[in-house]
Image (cartoon, rainbow, N blue to C red):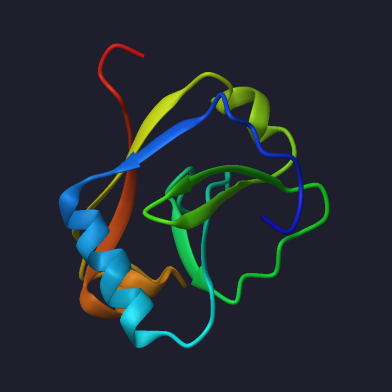
Length: 116
């Protein structure tokens, strides 16, 4: 992971449906994939899947999901410390996010693992 510190306390897994969408994005992309999870104003903590993601200064490589690095911006690492989260996917024909799955009318969502 090229930037930041790996936080092994963050546990991220993906649903089978999300893994299939990630694999589709991998097949249709030529560059490396990365997830970014932040507290943005428009979509909150929704995970965004990018190709050739520019990792901002201070961003932490928090975990890996389906062989894709998951990055957290400064300040978010403490929020997700010791968390267990699931990246899932569902229909969203109206999303204007720049995340790769939106071209197929889908959107990744973040769910808390039961019991965490």
